[in-house]
Image (tube, rainbow, N blue to C red; front, side, top):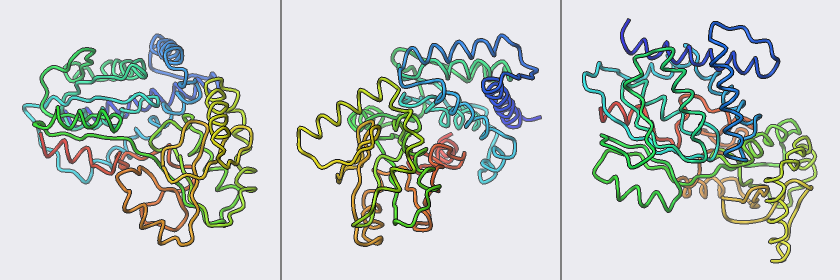
Length: 355
């Protein structure tokens, strides 16, 4: 069995472990060939991650773990990699990964891509998400010891590396561009996701859109932060469809943001629509604050298409139904496939070309 095949098999087994853990966490009926020590440790890591980052509640952590469990099947991985030409590498490259920390395991796809291409991951974690990935790496090494010399976590300045994938704000991205200009690199900046509504959506579609809006409290780049609606759009069905998400206001940090943003908007005499847990504000920007959703009206779908084309470097996902070739269906932004690359930059191709 080649190292490439071993790497694939290891991630398939990791997916099985995560899937079994999620089943256990959801219904308590764990059946397993893995040690209970690993299970108990993961439970402890989830608890610790929650304490370190108040946005990482158990539900969202389990959602992230389950999403990766569903992605890491043999069929999915083989389909994903079937379009690439893998050559045996005698000298794997050291790839620096500077990760964000806005949602649980946000940098896992980069981590996976580096290792599956036979390279070494030199990881600098955000302090907001520095608990879960090291544990997942330990499980992976337990499954396949060949990864022992391929995974490194660094807390201080990054040591020698051959290429870099860095994610940060627009401000830090400018620093990254300068600092890493002499290395092959992918630099990711702030992006937001939007939805285009026509007024013909069913209640079920709008309920599914709620998942795109509220999952991870709207903190992900794949979280819908703005909607485009036709002029004269009636928001009644929209608010009715989202009502099932009202328990989100019970989360103190979310509620504090809701109250603060509502107060600021009202003092500024902005016209608002709100339902007790989500504020709608008409705004031309894409990045709305927590507990807020921007909206913009349109006369022509074609104008919106042209606008989004012009602003494509600001956009991660576009949710709609039958309007765009690259659209994402309602309710699916938070469960990307392995082939859904951040910023539409093919990470595996980048790694193979520079290895």
